[in-house]
Image 1 (cartoon, helix red, strand yellow):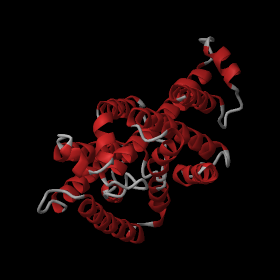
Image 2: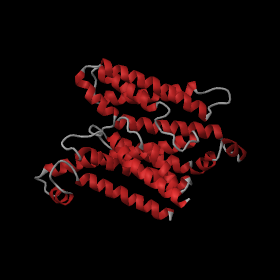
Image 3: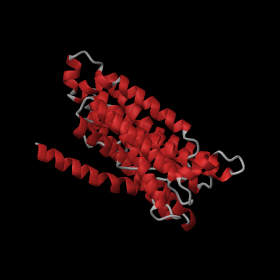
Length: 323
């Protein structure tokens, strides 16, 4: 049953990427584009498929997979099935640094570098401030992350209030998620693949730690090292996603929870299923974002909630009726 579910999710991911390649503002279907790709004298099709739609779809899929994996790690780390990968302030740090770079007049890779530095700075700040007697506890990490995130949000609000009107729209759009300037999908795909490999390698420790730290310690598991690894993995995946596409909420929050409700709590299944489901959800949201109001583009983060909330409510109702 679980193998069939994973195959179904993989098929859904392929179909979603195919849809992303086929659908767009250009009046050309996938069959027409594939035929025109063979024509060396028609560079338009090659540009549309190989330089615009396919890289964007792969970037969206890898970003969604990374956010879902970060959600898996954070939910086990904090022992809260509704924990969000952004809850520890990583997104806020990235947004603050990126907006500061935009206000300074830089663009492109400099903004990405600033976002990465801000995410790393927020991660290290939470990691340092949350350490106390007995190490890092879920409650201390959560509270510290919430405080750091609140501070970053306040800084973002102040920068938006003080900014000139012209760049504010672009800043707000980036804050709500945007794949327009994602660039090559290879770096984000590499990050997502590394996160998936790490999650599969940690599947058994994740199962044990989810039952409680005391039981994990009694079974001889290195609890402290495992928790530090989960924190670093979740933070780095979130930082990479925010650097690539801005702040896209909901995917990392709801996807792992839906997978656990549907397929059980074994992380040998939860990890790959969450990556596939998160990537598929974000690809579909991005397709809707660039086609529903074309030629205008909508914020991807808002659409992830519109897609995910009904699915979550339907699954919750199904679980309640089964129980």
